[in-house]
Length: 114
Image (cartoon, rainbow, N blue to C red; front, side):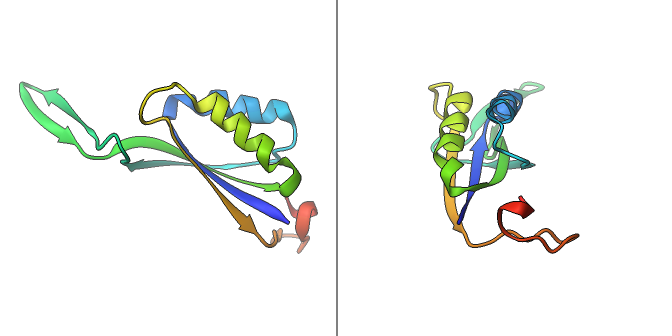
């Protein structure tokens, strides 16, 4: 079986996370999306040309990684350590079970498709 790991993190932490995951060696790829959202931060106020306005959604990065079960705890720990600043807004990691992976080009399935 596999795990599908989704991490929502601060944009400036992306390179640090990617380098740590690549150094570990068992992550063969990941998808990265620029997203906006809010959690406990609830956005923040900014000033532009003397006017104050509320930024409801905060810029974040969404990482999506599929890994074999045996590596999932290590991947989660690497992301958690690399993304942590200790401040509100560090992000979240979601872990979902994943039944199968299929490579479209070759029809390979399972870990060969990762």
